[in-house]
Length: 97
View 1 (tube, rainbow, N blue to C red):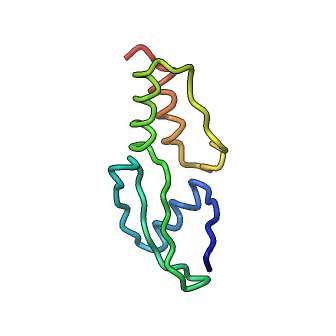
View 2: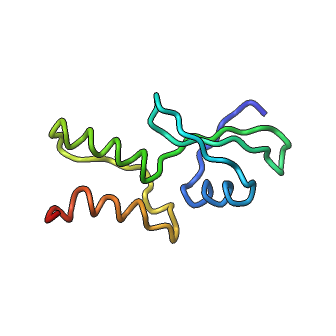
């Protein structure tokens, strides 16, 4: 099927675990990605997503350019995975470091 669809952070991590996908790094995009075969459709899917490493690169850019902040779409879709929240706290709230 020739379409893409959004996935939540929790769903992406579940897919990685269920498919034993190897997460790779796209250095140009500064983003992790992986490929897997969908158990539902049998088609090969490729997923680019943000994680702590890719967001750290973006947050460093925000801070180096002295921008006013960050915006994140649907951060609450991470379920019990708190590393993205922890990174925001370390980079923007806990400035005592």
